[in-house]
Image (cartoon, rainbow, N blue to C red):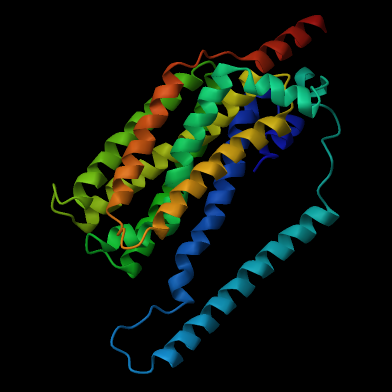
Length: 312
């Protein structure tokens, strides 16, 4: 994750960067779809079974098979990168890609001194750190409203595929109509908030829950939130130039990891249940809107490219 910005900058021009980031992230998301096929490999525990030890061993064996499948896929990809992936394209895609970046220490200092970048990092971490991890625990949240594992698999796959499509479309549009990153991010997060509010009402019993409502509220809520992620990262890269893209990615990923850690640790509270998760999701998406409102949108990398072309 920290190197997505660096790879994209090395290979793509500014008019393609947001789309390239979206493709990188959505491929990660699509890879995550395989997680929701786990019930096809790992059987669910059956209540009331007398031979609990046998059942436990059977499930442990299923999980082992699943881990070998993951290992095999990762190993094949590793070999592809090891033996094929080149360092860069035959020629630089833009003038800015040739410009020397600041060293690590200078980049980190400049990043932490820039309030606009800090605001974007907070928005990225707070929204994606919660919703992105919740997808792995969605089964428990939906179980609270009477939707079981097999039905949840369909909801999760629908949400993930829709998120991938939404991210690509939003990124492509912002690449075509450049200069509207902030407005688009705010619109996506606001829409995500509205649909997660619907899911919140389902979770708390304000609205009688149904499978159809769960499909719509979760799918659109996740799709709009995820569609904002590549745009947030691209706006970070634009504002940060000529700070090293690797440093930008590292800071953004660190914030995401910290929020993820805090969120996941909450599950260790004894007898905490899962209804609280709906409160946290709603709070995180609404909170992420606030810092974006105060960001001053600038396109430093794009301006550097335009100046470079004029000189030529």
